[in-house]
Image (cartoon, rainbow over all chains, first blue to last red; front, side, top):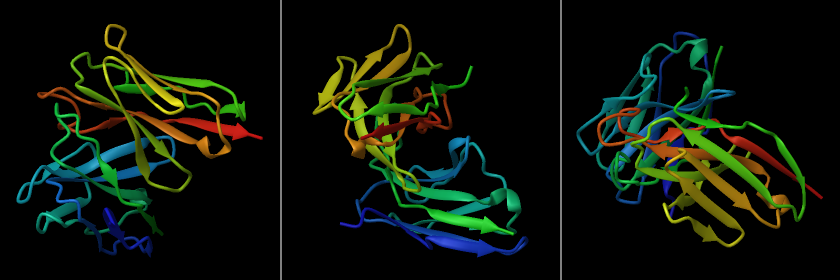
Length: 116
Length: 114
């Protein structure tokens, strides 16, 4: 049982390049999330998808776009990478949206992204 | 006041020690609470949920004090393998918070020494 799978694990980009981070879960979860984690900042929500067909902005959405391709997959795209987007990116999923329902989230093992 | 606050540590303790972490949260309407564990350069993993009545899982005990808006995690008989960062996590109420998702503290680092 793979859980939440992220690709790639590592990536180095040049400023202005674009790329897509892939995430897939095999737990039949409805909700999926993208976070970034920076030293001293903790985890910050970029975008989330409450269910297939919906996406919403989180705390730090600028410079990113997302696509909920189907129930399993939720991708994060950087259209024009900037050094400030150097971070560790985590994808997560939960049975349903965490609001009020107390649903814990299960995380992928992260993508380490460096932008030069 | 930040939404979820934790002492960043580090807490350096010998094997076998008992250690306690506290976490405070600002939204009194918060619904659910969790402790996650994150090893260095790894993803956060759910350690345990925190229930109003308190709950225990082996050497780990979690407590919730809604009146004072704090959550605690007690680790007894610390092992070397307990060395990690412990994240306090809160879900907001139905109508507010970070767009309805988990709110993470920045974590408390624990280092258990032989």
